[in-house]
Length: 203
Image (tube, rainbow, N blue to C red; front, side):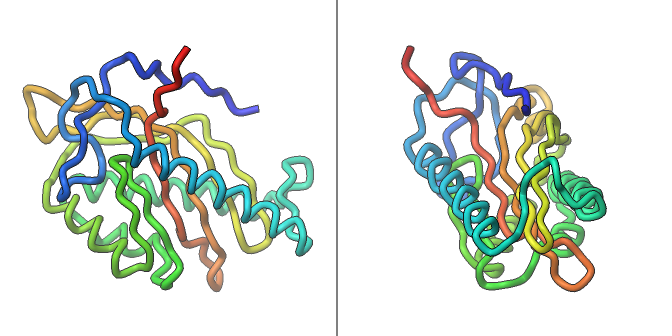
């Protein structure tokens, strides 16, 4: 079982997004509950569950006990490629991000600020907006859990690190993420990325 020890919602988080910045954190401070993030989290959870159910119904085995080891290894390399691309994007370089994504019309991006983009053209616009900010810093995946089928893989992990847009106030990044990859030809391409902080749950 994947360990879920994300920080308490009472800890410092990141600022609510503006209409332009609906991507990764810019400056740390306490925020209130974000209904857009909660709706996006529910949507992506339902999508992942639906994909898994559909794959089982069509014979695509996602069980960890019978996971295809070759595909799982390739998917882990694809995960590494995405986070390498993410960190390049923080420096303003979009080339690696363009390479790791599928350019299909059905890809989706649900950013940690509530952004919801569908289709590669819209997803690319969001990454371009974030790249222009040159946030700096670095983010890494931890607690990676891979469910790999023959052509679809669902990956869940936490994202930790910081962005450095403001040198005197670096923004801590502590999110949980769902990444979905599809095998296109010989390559595993990202078709969905969803990152969110934990929605506030009353005690």
